[in-house]
Image: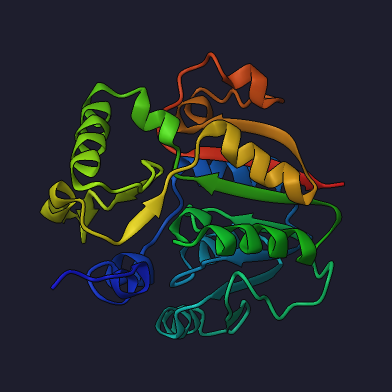
Length: 255
């Protein structure tokens, strides 16, 4: 039987990728080097096995903290940091135990908000991120981006297929909810049957609105394509008519 929620996915077929992953993506490295201060106190959400924080440690970042809701991941992260120089804890993104304004900078990459299946809990996760960040602090977010799927002929065909099959079944499920196309690095053929679990794919407008709603100000925004060109935009409006490929990345400030 297929897994019925994302937590089961992370504890089974996707476990190795999240627990033992290494190195930074080019986009992650660019954002971290460009927008984060190595001397600041930093929190990473959904750290998994600590991939990003362990690389940031090598880069010279001093005060690093990370959490994940999977105890198995936190155990792996701690084993990969034998000096215990990084503070890893088990926490839920929607109910963080940190005090208000605990961190100078926060890292919400790896599209962790998009992996939360419930709308209310996604909103809570963003609210909690805002709460634990200090005023004028910097936040890095990434989202699964539906616009990138709509701009791709290959994926647009799949979206049309899902729209038709859901309509035939009488399902009112939004196309923002999409099944995993790959699991464990292999094609997930259950996606053709529109099997859960789903991940949530934000539109550009919706992601910006969700961040603005809690008080974040957008400093820079772009997709994987823009980062590869080293050209992030200062406003979402500037991005509307540009190619959107890959993930959506937002650099925010708590004002």
